Image (cartoon, rainbow, N blue to C red; front, side, top):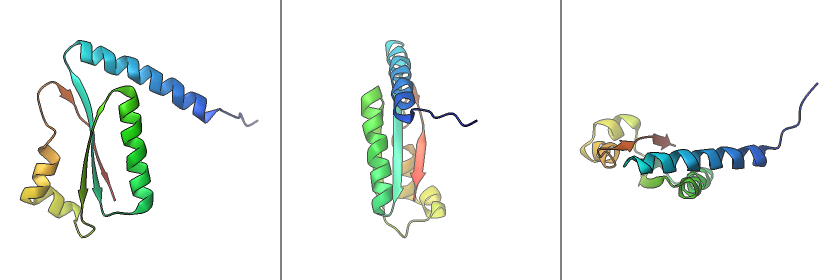
Length: 103
């Protein structure tokens, strides 16, 4: 038998747990951040990225956002001078990292 779950409730519970964990990291002098690299300007992708930024702000994680032109490829992104800067710009001591490449 299928079980109906309350997705909004579960999401809120997870966010509260993460908020507590992020605060614990901060108390240790560590900083959490999410770097988002959006390639192109697809409206649905923009909404997705905007929602990630809101979630980060809510739980206390810094949000870094970089928008690249549609013609950017992962190969160029990875090997170009500008691309490498995008991937390393948020690197600093005492941070936890997550890089999201969304196209």
